[in-house]
Length: 508
Image (cartoon, rainbow, N blue to C red):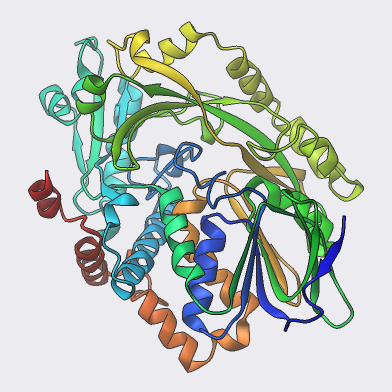
């Protein structure tokens, strides 16, 4: 097949984005706001944006803000609750809402409810020990303005009002408790991503190449990156030169990072985990539950296994999901290859991957158990949250792939990370995002940090600093330490995004 070197007769593109997901969309929009003259080229192996990890049906959690996710608030050996991660994530999600509000106002976005809606966030536990844990968690979190308004209750009638399906048929002698945060949201990151790319596509100097798979990327002596991509429809390959490359290809980021040849990529590996949902198909059941209800992961199971009964708004329709049920696949992407995992193993990451594997044998056992689950096993797990669940009301749906980060560690040899990791070259000319949750919800803060690291001189200018403050009014400030700023920021974002409880009630 012929090769087209489009760099031969065109200027060098300033930014190359690989992968049309939430991270690339966020970075592209931010950079265009900071410098409208930047040229951007986007490559995506599928024929639409946000069809992998960012898609609503593939994403294992939406609107992560630490209001209800119990794995963000572990109990210390002395019985106290560590809320540091919850504070960080809650602050990052507020930054995301600020950026989305900025875009909504600047571009007069009308149909905001296509991507964000008000949904209460709840944590629900049973058993005396777990009830006490939740009480301590509530007491610790509500010391921060970020969690102001969080309610705690053991009153069964109150819980019945909050989540009737969860309480119906439950043992009346079972100790139960829940927290409720009415400020919770549901975010359709697929819709949000496609909306941002539509805005980006209408800007000058932006070029999209869908159904193109990047096969090679290499930095030359002049500092520029050469990208070779194959058109999966015609078989033709194209070559592009760029000053900065961002790899935001979800599970596909690791193989591309390895192809870059930068020394900073050495030692990184990936552990893929597949997922499944039980999807409710009974409209009457769906209509009786409106909340994201998170529980505690079973003893010995990984953070990714935290079960939740999840109300979502997808394409204007309310849906109800339960899960996720984990599984194992050697694919790095839902549309990937079973050779993804073995082909990612190299000499520089072999030891970290082996050591991380040896230290995570319980995870392997957990995944084997999940893979071997029968329909009755999945129904039993659901009935811990919905005691009167009927099998005919639910069907199995396949979720997306996650690739958890494995990296080298001087002490342990290799560690498995449950989060996101930005890997960038020393010269700042290329960066990649690895990992999973809570990535999408915290994409804005991740990209702000990436921009400051990879564009340090421009970021320090008065012009870029002013633009950062326009996009994020709390830029450079700590929300967790400033109740007045939290109130101001939330009042604005809730108004712009239609998330005020009073607004929602009027619409309903």
